[in-house]
Image 1 (tube, one colour):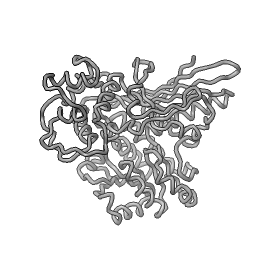
Image 2 (cartoon, rainbow, N blue to C red):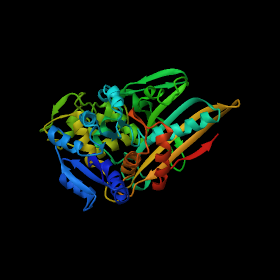
Image 3 (spheres, one colour):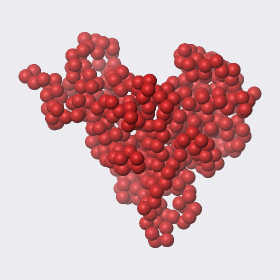
Image 4 (cartoon, rainbow, N blue to C red):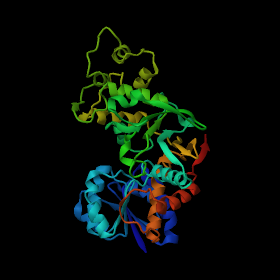
Length: 441
């Protein structure tokens, strides 16, 4: 019997664990789920004969290495900064590693050792990054195989709330790690547009949000995502004029988040003493308020908007206009904001989330310019079995099965951009209603 070790039992692990346990009897494997929360683990694995809980402090080297030594394959859904310690152990004990996170500089330093050991460390094997790579590369290879010359590539993805579950002015609810939401975009963005490299700071991102039309949904806003240029070589599109990867949101979200950025409430460096500090005092800590004005008017005046605007309604919904004390000890602005959004924008039990992904590729073939749209929309079941958990976890589960069935010959530090990976993974994802539709212009 093969053994799979999963680090992390959080929001994104649910569908992955379901998939691994559903396949365990036929595939003859056993799953160990390691986390520091035993109750959380048990809520995910139930009483399955094919699963075992392992309560662990990930920084306990002896306990961590014992788990890795005794397994056949490691999957990490830990916070991104912790992947590297697992990666080093996997290299030491000669174990393949899967994760949904971005390749980071530290694991990049291990690239030659991973290749030399004949191991496969498959990073970016989730939704975004993950399904975006696989579906994009399938399209790109298909166009190129037919003689098309690509000159523009744009890819969009967003974890959103289903329209049926929208009941707040933000048009958003949290279906994954709240810290990732708070920190999204904080490093700014770089992309290429019409032959020119564009760079946007965090302060510019949401202010420059634009919109696209998505079939069945209408208008969604987008903002460029991280460093798009880093993927031009991976996609073998180094010479095209336009290349951009972007995040999707409902338009109201971007407008409201832009206000939070302008107020300085997303900063994650400076720490603030929050005991006896009200939310309104925190929201206005970077500027002088006018005691003659009300709370709404003070913030509206600073932002240059009407006190009756939807942005003020959004800030009020989060609680930024009230005089309740925060009382969270010493926190960064981002830490306070994370506490607020986890409370105010949480998904209720019956709420459903939604994943939207769309690729827009322009190419020329036989002297005819063509634009193709390829899009995917999938919804979750409730606030536990979410679309986000499904779209992040299932690619990892399918990849684990392919490796343990010896159907993957690939080695090294990789992301899923090759037919050997994307063809079987995308095919099986369709069984879970994760499929793309295409239209041409």
